[in-house]
Image 1: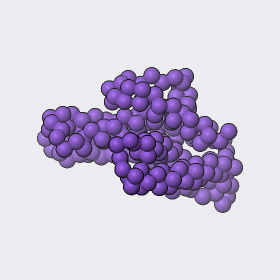
Image 2 (image 1 turned 90 degrees about the horizontal axis):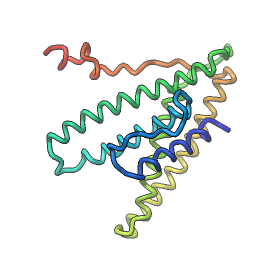
Image 3 (image 1 turned 120 degrees about the horizontal axis):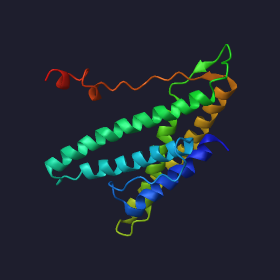
Image 4 (image 1 turned 135 degrees about the vertical axis):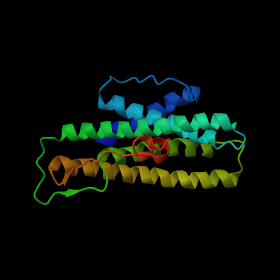
Length: 200
């Protein structure tokens, strides 16, 4: 089983579990053992799914400004949680392949495996919600057709991205690629680097 063959059903389960209530305040009920890669993949996608719906809600033109501000704070926290999860998944890859000696001609990738997996998680959400649009009984045929065309592209993208991720992991395992992980230094979250915060 490849890593994306492991990941995709977990992402799909998290999305389905969320939509049982379809409520951003539903507490996560992770079915996997804490500390396992499956646990982190489920939690990663759950965070992505909740944030997807945060982004829908905040675009309501009639949203109360005070509610919008509170929601923006929740989105900021969600973004940080998402980044933390990606870094934890990269730590899994670093630990898994820590004994692999890179070949002399080994190269580095433009992104780490976990950031590619992050894109795969978001893609699972796009596919779920675009497929929803193709099944609407309150939309006209033109809308359905456009969404079906978009869904077809997303499914092709999922196939290509999965293949690329699995190839990257194979290359790391074989020493043809090596990992180098940079922590995401988000300055606006840090009171010591955000001038709005440290100048107060």
